[in-house]
Length: 418
Image (cartoon, rainbow, N blue to C red; front, side, top):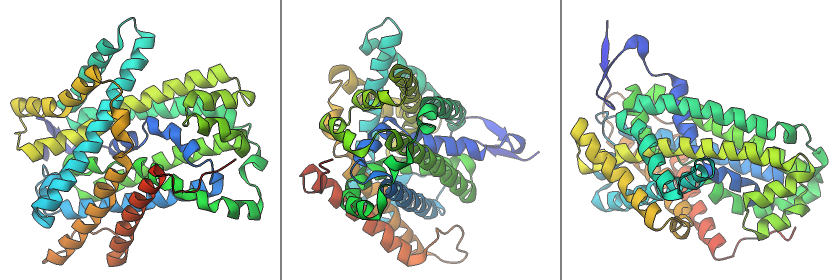
């Protein structure tokens, strides 16, 4: 029987036990659908349903193709090669340094945020302090990453299924109480809402930031085509969850009632309280809390896997027990320490994560694909669709979203009066 070495772990797997597409798609979806999803309704409150859905669809398509571009650039490298290796080789040390800083900045900040948030959630259920809860969470869930990509696959599938079920039960009442007149307000009103859509794009981009896991997926499947399918299915799962969620919220809460939610910075408790008139608020709050916990736990292992493989390649750690332990320490110890001593320090930095993410989710993958094609000789192999025009489009999208992000920070984007 043909045997394949599982490069992400230290085991042998058979062709009859090959990785499933849904497992890889679950990793992608789990990375995308973090707790930040609950900020989407507030980000799109000005643009409302049609323009928000359009922003999400456009972003999903661009981010899927940009992930495929990174996959294309990796095709000529060994399976354990990561983002850092291919960027350094094709774009040089300076670009690689900037990209590495951006990748680790966003990945590290997310792990930092997830550890803090998980600790606070567990503290409410178990009679331990948030610090102890954070330590327990970090050690237990990072163990899946330490073991192998296949372990992350399995736990991601379980968490994604649990997340979807809790999500469906949580929004079931909302979805069937949707008032269509709340969603669509006529052509003249929809045209008036258009300027507010620009505030949605930075949030939408960060909601599809899975690219630090692309190299891990390629190594896991030993195939660009299988990784491509997993990426597409994963981003489609995320898109469906996002659209159903904003549809359910906007269909139950009229646009003019979003004023208090926006004034409180999009606080989820305020949003759920505002939805109380549509469905029993405590029940929705409890189920959405369960959903949020599943989203944070699954995002932690998904993001952790991407950062883990990135660090291993960057620092040249071996793929054996000792090497993986070194990688584990470099990946999870810094965000854990920060979470214990400065639990909410990530709030200062996370506001800039969206702009940093545009570098390694759009701009660099497109430049890598361009360089890879220019250097190609012989058989082409896997190529992302769209040709050179798509490369220009992806770069333009990344730059535009970065500009919109800083315009939002400076208060230069249209703000809905509601």
